[in-house]
Length: 220
Length: 70
Image (cartoon, rainbow over all chains, first blue to last red; front, side, top):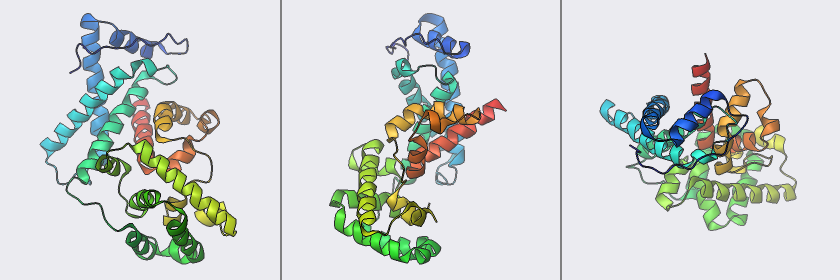
């Protein structure tokens, strides 16, 4: 697993609860206590990974039980490395176990999303997804917001850059998970979300200028 | 989330995915303690509304920790 991995010592935080403090001390130490802590931590992360994959059983229906088990172990292994590499970031503002869980959930969710899309081409072209989604995906919303939807479609075509348009439509209308698109494009979830965020801001500003958009019209 | 909500995203200012991940554990514990996580961590709820991946992981963490606490 991770024996020999360098661990940065976190600063002492007065708000850290005793159990979390014990986790950090054991993981930042050496010898038998650290080995035992690593084993307990891996078991904790494996439980979280299995929890996440269990929620995604439907996405992973093509995998055998053995393959799902292997995926959980891979997620726990990767999460363990991430936890150790980021140990100095743990400030004790939550319990250590809660902090550690999120790494396992992220790893498991990301692996599951990618696994579910591993043999699938990303749908194209984006403009067609919008037409399909507007009529088939959310027919009630489309009927209620026909004017606004038409204005949004026009704004998507007019004010977004080609990159913004492709990313926004791929994720929102094409329902491609951010992690999957990030892997195919060689980038990160955060970078893609920033693109989506900027595109949404641009659309909102454009629509506000036309007087069509208020928050109520979007969420009604 | 409707198509319009997906295309236009949350109206409020929001954090990015990295900041969301950095604070997600604290946010969940504040939620489960009945505190006001949005006052402590502004912009995170808006991000969860706009980002499906982070929203799914938030739900998982909340359910996992809540199960431990029962």
